[in-house]
Amino acid sequence: MEPRFDRRALHSTGGLEPEMIETMFGALFNLVSTPHTMGLMLIAVVFGLLVGVTPGIGGKLSIAMAIPFVYGMDMVAGAVFLLTMHAVNGTSGQISSIMFGIPGDGDDAATTLDGYPLAKQGQAARALGASITASGVGGIIGAVVFAIMIPVLEPVILMFSPAEFFLIALLGISFIAFLASGSKIVKGLIVGFYGLMLSTIGMDPITGTPRYAGDMLFLWDGVSLVTAVLAMFAVPEMLSLATKGGSISAVPMDKAFSYRQLLSGVMEVPRHWWLVVRTSVIGSVIGMIPGLGGSTAAWLCYGHAVQSSKTPERFGKGAIEGVIAPETASNGKEGGSLLPTLFFGIPGSSGMAVLLGAFLILGIQPGAMMVTKHLDLVWTLIWALVVGNLIAVAMLLVVCRWLAVLTFVNGRMLAPFILVFVTIGCFVSDVQWQNLVVLVLFSAVGYGFQRAGWPRSPFVIGLVLGGQAEASLHQALQLWGYSFFLRPMSLVLISMIVALMVYAFYRNFRPGNRQPSVEINT
Image 1: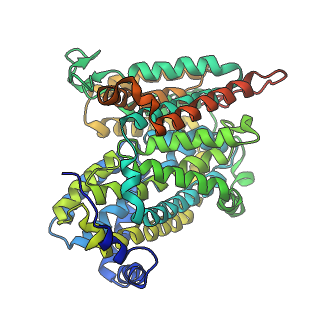
Image 2 (image 1 turned 180 degrees about the vertical axis):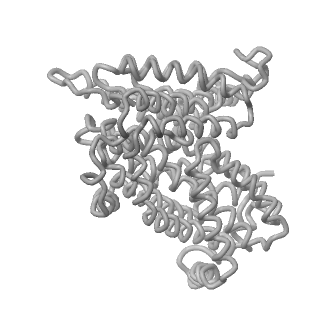
Image 3 (image 1 turned 120 degrees about the vertical axis):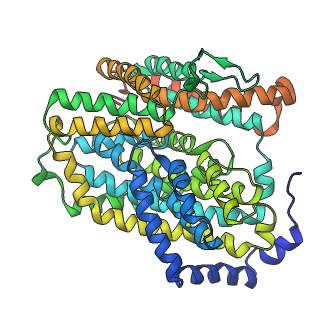
């Protein structure tokens, strides 16, 4: 039965009443004044950062690995430990994306587009400072959005149906027109449709029969996203680096790195505060919608940053906004995805699905009771997101000095180690040796795209959003037929898609416009 909230009980604890304020700040005081809980949080931050910086592992596996250690632990302490570890994964995930062009998963791939070019220009410290700070701020804003949405969460969650899921996925796919603009828009669309085509590999979402997989069981779940992302971005960049020689950075170390540069990256976040707020809120809202996930949030917000910029031609060449937007969205969605997980028992993402199972083991029962009788636990988890992100940002800013040095190491020495690292991450992500064969095949395609100057990011967008769009379309047609296009929310989203495409083509093909592609070598 669908859970329903007791609105009178919610009113007695909600809003800005004294009871609510007392519960809010009482949870914060209990969290920071309990040495045991804070010690567990510190351990979770360190472990989460290490997992996040390792390509292929991701938050889901880290939570699964930690469940035996929290079994039998106090409910609050165990929940804070697991949530903190999961939340800070994204804070460090962009490190390898920026320094080596190696995204850990689909969320981090968007950061690679501008983060890696900045590292090549000797601005790794600036990019790291901006991305780390943006991740922390995004996580905090996501927690704030979660808190604000508590009184009105039910109608917001129930507003979305498969019809809206399909159109939101279509909206994300339409951003291909911005990521491959100018003379490369046709190439970008071809690459995007290639990703959409490969997203159909696996089990049919309606009939459950395998498609284009034959007897290869490892393909029944579809093409591994981690494998595809690593093959398209990481391997081609490392092969180019090894053949070219020299370091990733084109600038000598003594002329490039400085703490002033790191601080300038940190200050880029308040300098672009309106973009930070917008993308954090967008990421949080996307996180609230079960099934969309962090990859959707990151790519949508990257596309939004390009679309809303007065100088979109800078993106793909080292625009700092291209680092800030996906990072705020990726971490902002954690607060949003926690909302349906706790109050409806519906995981907001695949990571939250594993976290939900861990919560059940700890004795946390998601549902309306979380609002009416366990609001103190809810506020404790909200504060855990805020405090955990602040600790993670402080730690990473301290070690940035040594991380940025790796971009000055000779590429011929660095590439073999990174490729081994990528191979291990690819295998660990699904524990399927066949993914290594897929890695080799897709790497050849990715390297060919790079050498030919074809954009690669549309491929990831198509692969990430294609399966979601197909499943949602089938469900919407079964529920409403083609009349789902006439639903009020559907009409709003259709208008947004049409307006976006018209604007993209007008901007790229208007007379006298000769903008270069947003993505040159990425």
